[in-house]
Image (spheres, rainbow, N blue to C red):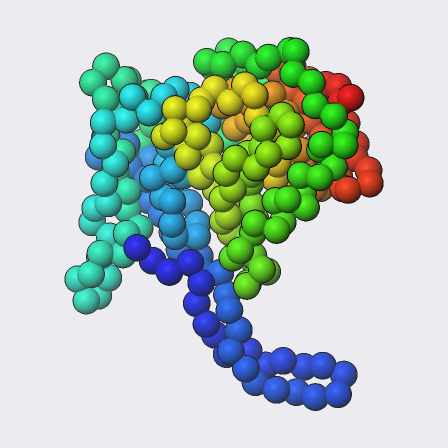
Length: 270
């Protein structure tokens, strides 16, 4: 498995001196995901928890809904000039009876705001594809929510050494940290933590709050909805389409989540 961090020389310039010293950087490498041997997508990620990433990605795309839908996950074909495996190609074999959607090899999945489909079509597709309609009776307090970014930040071990990773964390409704994952890509961090939940048999996450270290894009709201998460908190802003999808799906969406303030865009907070 590849390293999560690496060291590089850096020229450090301050007001009174210039020095050259080593700096710790977050590793970024490509991961090719294959589905039943066919190329599916390539994502730039921080190595580690790759199987969770794949599980979370397939869950968010509506291809799988439980760990029983996966037969095997294995690394293959990723070799460097020395013949060593780079662990940058991962093949997911679906369980018998789990169908591969048409066009999977062409990456015809609904994901980002750059995918080229209209907003209304995007909302309709996600609403009809999710297997886990969101609970409408989840109650979470503003006091609990305000504590979550600090609790998440304290557990971002690689971020503290590099300053270069996003985080996604699952909490219980009463504010207990369940699991956290870090990655150079905010969508990968979410896939990893949702993939962990899937592998642990916790999906749908109907009693959970998902907190992310960046903004709340349409894609991240989509992933939360597809996993049955009833509340999503982001330390930065949501996009307009993210708010639309949250409203359509019954997701409580909080942005600019701080210890002393927050914006509640959809749903309700006590």
